[in-house]
Length: 529
Image (cartoon, rainbow, N blue to C red; front, side, top):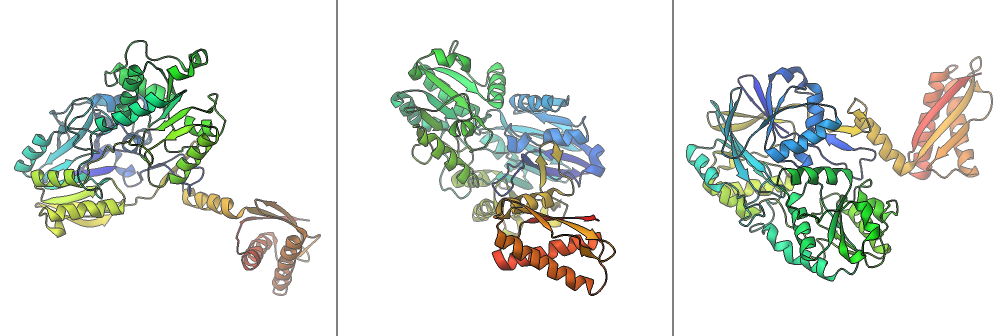
């Protein structure tokens, strides 16, 4: 989420989510931090969406909870995906549909939209004109010269803006470390065809639920090889239904069937398209790997993972691959076949853009720190002054004054966790730390009964352990550590219940750290006799 401010008004470009890593158990998604906007919600003129991927639109429902009438500007497919998400949140949005080539005002912001191609159709770059200068935001993009939808990235438009004078250029950094040019989506057709030609039984394809271009390739291959197709998973069914209805997905008549009809069809005549290419535990593919899905993977089935391997998801993905292989499936993925093409511009494309846009200032965005640094280096090599190429972390404030961009401050930008029905809250970080500690070291509850007259226990403490080995030796040692600490405390004064709980926790923590090099989550409960 990027926020632009001019004349006291705000413009938000994209509002997405992060997906949790293995070190963040129990988290559904991670939101941008809206805290710096809460006192200024009425100043927001619009949310502009560059394309329909979750990391750009997933946070929109949560921001509209704060103010439901914020106008949402985007292309036809992007707004259709957002609308479907908002229906689940029971929010009716104010939508403004735009196309490439159009200009539109949003308060003091004059917006112009340019076509870009990506791994999802209908992507847009946005040029933002104000009295303070001209900003060009690429969104996620690449320069595919043979796109499936024949919609080229508008490089003449980029060059025209360059002639006008781009004061700040925000560029997609995801592939900045990759030399050359990203190959065209069409290049994976032979690998997909090889899978369809050689698969002896069912084919199960896993992809992002919004990856319309990739799913189009699979549908085309199924038609060529006389196989029927079924979508599996709520988000996949919903998104592909939207894409087909709007004409972004071309499906031959009679090709799609309901998944329930597959039991009556020959195994070599069917294709299932589902979610779960990133190893998400609740997605269809992971449940198939764990034998928890109605579709049972068997000997001779072919599973095609038709998406990239997102950094941080490697263990989850390989766990799913191992599970599928165990049941006899042949798993085809990016590591053993050319079944994925990136949706992001590589270094050669970024350099080309810098040379035609000729920006005064560059802000690499959308990527990890190493991607931002690689993108910054490319800008400098094309002639942008080193002090005018800014690498900014989340929360950094940049001022653009008289054609010069400078980092001038920062606003709060913490990770906001969505866990179940709960969003954020002051205890999110602490709760997550407890979960990690629980997963590593388990939990111990200590129960004691206190004689308030003497400050002594009426009987030995009881322990309830979970995820930690509890034997007689451990109980004896833990009990002694608590008794010793209690005697020492009572020499000073007679302890009360709250003080005894602290003694329980602190003494057991010290003892377990010395004895076992482990610190479980300890809960102390004291009852007065």
